[in-house]
Image (cartoon, rainbow, N blue to C red; front, side, top):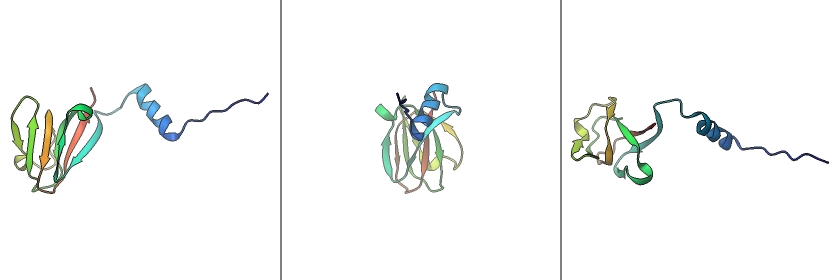
Length: 102
C-alpha cells in the first residue's frame, strides 16, 4: 500500500506561519496613495499610520472623529499616528499608509 503525500505551496506555508505565530512587527500592510483617493473603511479598516514619502505632496486626510489634515503641512518622513477614513492625494506624490496590528 502506497502512502499519500500532501505538500503545501510556499505561499500557504508562509501564510500559516503568520496565522499561527502572529505578525512580529507593529504594522502588517501598507498602501501607497498618489494622485488618487483611498477610503479606509470596510476591508481597508485598521490603517492608522501615515508617512509622507515625497515633498510637495498635496491633498487632505479625513479623520474618523472629524476634521481634515492638509498633507502639504506634514513633514516628509515623519510618522503620524492618525485614524484616517479617507486620504485624497492630489500632488502626484506618494503618501504611505500603514495598517496597524490590533
